[in-house]
Image (cartoon, rainbow, N blue to C red; front, side, top):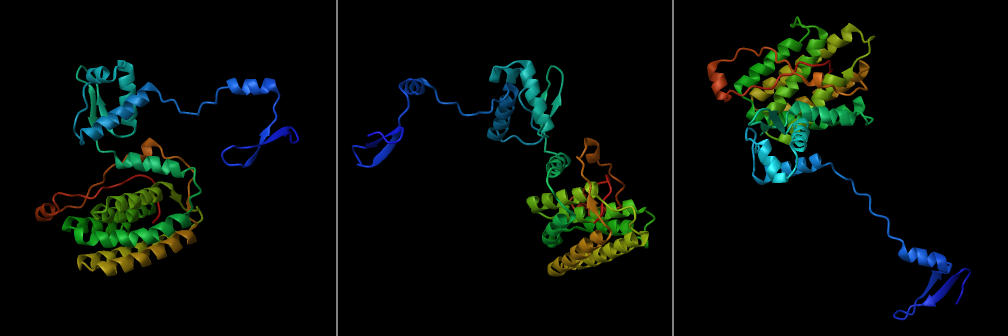
Amino acid sequence: MPLGGAYCTTTANTGVAVVVPDYPEERQQAMATQKPAPLAIKQLKRSDLVAQEIKRLITEKNLSPGDRLPREIELQAQFQVSKGTIREALKSLEVQGLVTISTGPSGGGTIVEVPLDRTLQFMQNYLFFQEVTIDDIYAVRQQLEPMLAAGAVPHLTEADFEALEHSIACCDPTQSQEDLVSQRREDVNFHDILAAANPNPFLRFTCELINEMIRQLIVFGNRTPQAEHRRFGEANAQFHRAIVQAARARDVEKVRTLMQSHMQDAASSVKRMKGRIQGRLILDADTLRRPRAAPAVSTAATAAAGAKRPRRRAAGVGAE
C-alpha cells in the first residue's frame, strides 16, 4: 500500500514490513541501468610496481648486503619492461637506501644495509609535521635511556670504556678546551656509545633517533647565561663519570638508577635554559657525518672489542 511517496510491503519469508521508495518509472529504469561507482584504487606507476617486485625478489632469494641484483638487461627480460622503467625502479630503491647503482654494460644494483642516517632523516622529517615538544622528548628519554644503559653494561668492552672516558673529557667544561657547542655535541656522543653496545636493535635505533633529534633540532635561547651552560656541562660530566664507574663494576642496577637521575636533571636543565625544537626539515647535508679522531686504543683492547668502534657524529648543535 502507498505510504507518503513509498510503498509498504511485507517480505514473503519473514513477514517483516519494509518501506520501499515510490520512485517515478523513468528514475527506476535509470537506476536499473546505472553502474556502481568504482572503488578508488591508487594506480601505481610501472616503475613502482617493478620496484615492489624487486623487493619481493630480494626477500625470496634472501639477499644480503653486498649481493648483486640481476643485471639491468636481465631485469628487463624478467619483468618485460623498458630500460628506462628498470632504471627508474632502481633509482627509487636507491633513494630508499636499499641499493647502490653502478653504470656500464654490467651495471645494476647492489644490496646495501639501509643507512641509519637516511632512516633517521625520514623519521625526523615525519616528526616535522607533528607537534613534538621538549617535554615529549625527555618524557621518552627518561623511560628509555636507563633501560638502554643497563642493557649495554654486560657488552661494554675496554675500547668502549676508553671512548666513553674520552667523550667525558671533551664535554667537561672544567677540562675541555672545546667550545660550548662541541661540548653539548659530545654529551650526546656519550649516549650514542652506550647505544652502540646495547644488543637490542629496536631500542638502540629509537634512542639514536632521539639523540639525532637532540643534535640537529634542539636549540637554546640566545639569552641563556653562559654560567647556566657551564653548570649543565659540569653536571653531565659528573653523571657520565659515575655511570662509567658503575658500568666498569658491571653494576647494572646502579647504572640504571644513575641514568634515571641524569635524565631528570637534564630535562630540568634544558627547560631552565629555554631549549626548544627548531621547526625545520632535515637536509641531506645535515646527515653527513665527519668522523673525528678517536682516542688511541691498545692492541689488546682492540682485539678484545673485536675491532668494534662506536659510531661518531659531528653534525648540528644540540643539548643533552
